[in-house]
Length: 541
Image 1 (cartoon, rainbow, N blue to C red):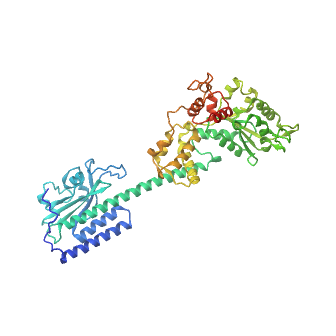
Image 2 (cartoon, rainbow, N blue to C red; image 1 turned 45 degrees about the horizontal axis):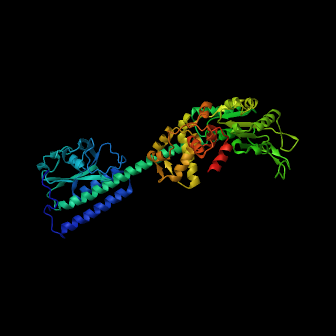
């Protein structure tokens, strides 16, 4: 390029002269008006065009233009590079004093002309005479459109986060009574302001898009949350299960809910109750795996005063309390054989007898049961009564695993996220990419596992916006073994603890790890009941 001398005075008055005072006042006015324009709007085109207009009107820096890399994405990484030579092309995006045709012609490749060189090297360029500079292209503005006198050209790199993304350039008449160094200094300040404005505008756009996507997903989640019975999701397998539930809701037939652990059996049982004519009567849930064998009869059927030590008063059992309503027996496969006989009698005769009593008490109730066991296998093994199995299996409804309804994962995740944020006074939100990653996960623990992951994420997230990279550390190991679903799989654990060592701490811990912390599954794989497993686990620990 031609000789560059930033201290060239162009015949300006000496320091402190009237001309210098004049230009200083214009510089201050320019900067204040540019700041005011930026403060009025984040629409960068208008603010930058006003900047170029003021440069021309106040300082005589004419035909100003902002050249930006085509397809610019300021959110595309945190690169700290100083060079900009990895772009394909750049073009004039904002201009003042140029015709539409001149703006259209202003396109540059890396290193092409003075403008392309500034983009590629991130170094400012001052051409004191465009006619004497071989690299000057006269591409946007042809020579015949410029004054006949000597014309200078100044180009400043525009940077965002130490990344060159554009050029601020203008023409300058050399015969002006103003220091060239002053023009270079003021353009450097304006280029910095332009970069900050572009960065701010991009951040606002990203935030706006993120909020719009989040609002759209939240709207979908709210619409789903308002679905029938509070069951969230619109996938075909889920709707099929709800349809089966509704078709049998008005009958009194016993319903058996089948499905893996964590698929929402209690929610479906409650939905069946709400859809039935018994909706205004009690809904009683009983977890058969949580009641000791010695207390089953008293809990289910009640007891009379003096029936056993400590029975100081008569008490109505759960079946009696649920009269005219619905009883949900969860984990029915854990019911002891002795209680299976009494339950069958209650179902056949519609009466119960309290422990220690003789009087038959009529009960009118709808029975819903659930299990993740293969009851047919339990019947063949002699652990479940065949006649009771047939009585319970009148209307079996299979609940889909979460892996079968992946399209419901974003709705469920946002529902759990909203609930956890409220419970823990947090404001965590998920990016669309993070929701896609959740949908792609296998979820062997089904809806319960998803709920636990979301709650853990809300409590441990380091910042409110959770990206797909952040979410990886909250997801369980996808290589872990899935919960067995067939009797053969249940019968053969990965490690053989059937030679007398199935009750060691190592065996119990290994079973728990293989089944994701589910004690019922771990106990089943070792041939123990959940109560036996829990007792041994507490004792060994």
